[in-house]
Amino acid sequence: MKKTLFLAAAAAAMMIIPAQADAAGRIKARGARVNDAGGVTAVAGSCARGAAGGACRTRTVRTDGAGNATAASGACARGANAAGCRAATTTRNVDGSVSRNSAAGVATATGSASRQGQYMRNADGTVSANRSATASGQNGYYNAQSQRNPDGSAYRTVDGAYATENGSRAVSGGYTRNADGTYSGARTTSGSNTNGAYKTDTTVSSETGLARSGMAVGENGSVSAETTYKRGEGGSRNITCMDASGAVVACPF
Image 1: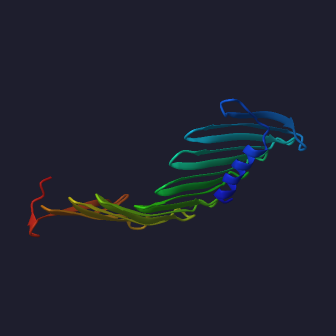
Image 2: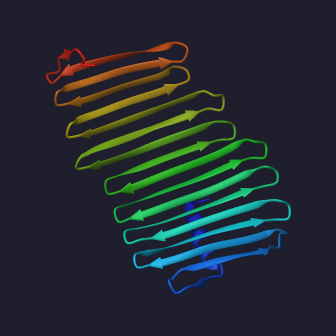
Image 3: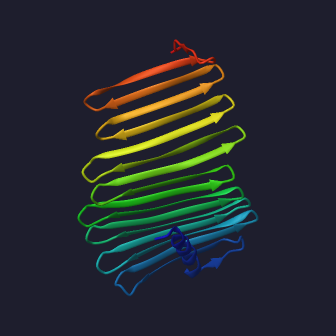
C-alpha cells in the first residue's frame, strides 16, 4: 500500500471516533464493542492543540471469532515550522502469517523526508519485505530502496548528494544477493571541503571477494590505497603517498 493511504487512514480514524473536548482544547476518545465478525473492535485516541500547533494520535485493535487480529496506529503533529504524520498496521492470522505496513513523513520550510515499509511472514515461514527512504531539500537529496524476497534473494540501492557552503558529499551504489547465495555489489562515496577531497570505490562479489580503492587529496599532498580480500585466500593492501608536487614520498603512518 502507498504511504499516502496509511496517512489518510490515520487521519480518518481520528475523525470517526467519538470525542469530547475539554476546556484546554484536548480531545480524548476511547471505546470497545463487539463487531459483526464475532470479535472485538477497540479504539483509543486523543488530540491536543496549542498556540504553536497541535497533534493527534489514535490506535485501533480488531479481532474476529476465528482468532485473527489487526492493530493500527497513527499520529500527526504540526508546529510552527514543520508537520509530520506516521501510521502502521499489523495483522496476525491464525495460520501463523504476519504482515506489517508502516509509513511516515515530515515536511519543513526547507525540505521533506519520508519512509515506508512492508513486511510479510507467510504461513510456511518464508519472509518478504521492502523498505524505502527518501529526503530532499535545498541542499540535496537521498534515496534508499531495499527488498527481500521469499526465496532468499534481496537487493539494496542507495543514491544521495548534498552541498553546502562548507562542502559536499555524495554516495551511490547497489547490492544484490541471489537465491542461490551468490552476491555482488558496488558503492562509491566522495566528498570535498576547504581542506581537500576524497573518493572511495568498493566492489564485492561472492566470486572475486572485496576490492576497494580510495584517494584523499589536500594542500600538502595526497594518499591512495588499494585493498583486496577474499575469504579463504587472504588479501593485500597497497598505500601510496605523494607530496604537493606529486612526488612519491614515504607515508607518515
